[in-house]
Length: 320
Image 1 (cartoon, one colour):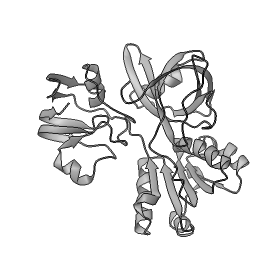
Image 2: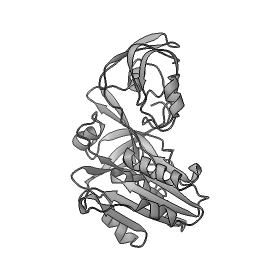
Image 3: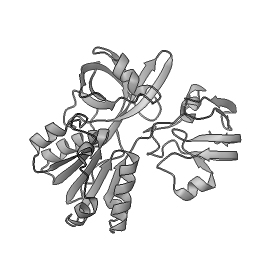
Image 4: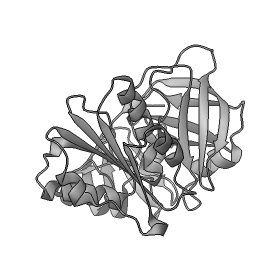
């Protein structure tokens, strides 16, 4: 597993939370302690699925102070490429699996006077660990959590029960919504914003905050993008001197790995920049789907994030 050290773990608990979300707990096979992590960190879960290796990132939601076990919550995606379905349908208590060392691309800025958290759907998971971390240090935080319905609002009851004055939940089916402008306008100086959820929510919060004059360094967000399928294409790897085929349901990063070429990564979701690759020749269109590159870099087509982006055209040559 490039990009991070492997941890051999055993599945010790599986809890269905609702029709879509299931929680998984992992403990180290050797009975020791797991590596430390801070709230907002994720791990990459390695899944061996009938001869195919799947590598999916999931936010750690357990207490960072508990090094005996990690927990993640996974939303089933019936239209996805199979990672969430594998976990929901094939993983059993007692199974041995492999995780990466935790990596944090969504950490709390401890210089903040207050932490304003905005979550949508399964985007609640990194905040579970962040809240535990802040509670231990008596940090000042406030959570606004939007979900489709009460039945699908994972951890809403737990959070509102434990923190009735700090947690605010909104249900789409009831026509409830976050009054974002008033919420942001009412925050004290030194507040930082953290948002995790669907792309539309992230863009809404970021653009609204920018319009209200919030500094970029005070706005934090996380969204792991699942690689979308597309037309098969061919790529030449100049350094490795290989020509590889990328299948319809395969990411460019996976195709590079399957060709035996080591490619660095941390998130596999277009957010960290670790797999950024220089484009040496491009006769066609790069379909950029990452959060990392700037718009002008997308237009230049001189770089690509192989974890989520694809290509349509005649020739693509990469510096890999």
